[in-house]
Length: 383
Ligand SMILES: Cc1cc2nc3c(=O)[nH]c(=O)nc-3n(C[C@H](O)[C@H](O)[C@H](O)COP(=O)(O)OP(=O)(O)OC[C@H]3O[C@@H](n4cnc5c(N)ncnc54)[C@H](O)[C@@H]3O)c2cc1C
Image 1 (cartoon, helix red, strand yellow):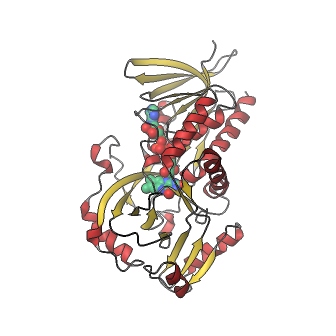
Image 2: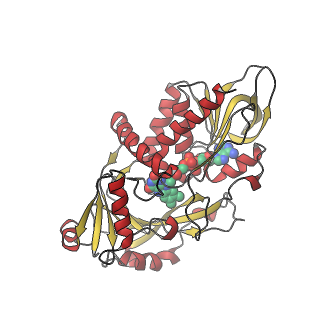
Image 3: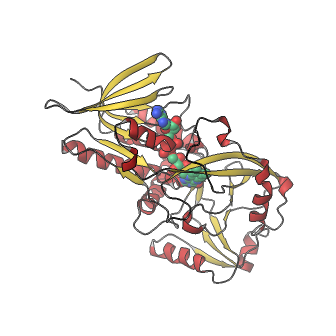
């Protein structure tokens, strides 16, 4: 039986779109997205920061793909006219000689990431509103319009012949192995009902739903690292813009989050967040309230922000939006890495689950896509 597509990608967030663009150079591509827009889940609910790559364990995929992806992303932004700015970030320490600040500085030197240490006076000259004993300045950190970025990825993928379908949900897939050809029999749902396609390879880029999708491909959940959903809320700040850089406190223990930081968007609007709130495993992702930001969090935010921005007053904070991290570790565990699971033996059709693609997934997206191409094309040629 002839296959309909070489690659079927489940999920039209930034990762699925980057994969569609990259894989369309190597064969025919179908991407399915359940919602009416691409990137409507985590990819449009983040800080839109291009990370330098300072935070991640040495040699981890998060580190390697962030470093590679950041360079690729800046080049892509310039080539494709995507709004972005290398605005620079200040990581501020509450006391002198803080070991966490020293660790970040050493990491930057080891990875050749530009960094400089500022005294309290030098910091005040740059950011008079910020109070800290010392700071690191990371000039490579930037901001991006993630919506234009995703639009360009989808346009590129389509220009290369990819078929990108919205309003199309992945339901299940069964592997068909035969002498003639191995492939996936994929069942999709649309507003018109169910239909099926045959695909040589499957890529699970379903973000928060990746574990459900893996299960629907016949992969038992107990063989995968468990998923922990961790929400982050944002508050917007009203008033004159107090900073010119992104301002970050020191990261949380186990890198659960980067601390409630100040980001600026390309329009100069300041927002604070995200915090970290692990959700109960029973939570339903389709629940309308899941992305609601409670005004009750305002005082907690204000007191966290006061540690570096003493002038903050809670009445300047307005609940904005929330995003959910698909974590593979709990708060008290070391942060898990991006996880690529290829559960099939080599003689079966290729399948790749992308799990735990939390921050810096946006920064790393082009490098993640290259990694997917490498793993799948190695796999296909071995068949
Ligand atoms: C609070 C927060 C802040 C962050 N800040 C940053 C940052 O500043 N910089 C950075 O680099 N990264 C950041 N990230 C990480 C980044 O946002 C993510 O790594 C990235 O968006 C993940 O993209 P994705 O495509 O894997 O997932 P998603 O954007 O969630 O896309 C998955 C898609 O799959 C679709 N889907 C799921 N199931 C199905 C199905 N059965 N059928 C069809 N479609 C399906 C969903 O509808 C969804 O659109 C942040 C994340 C969070 C939560």
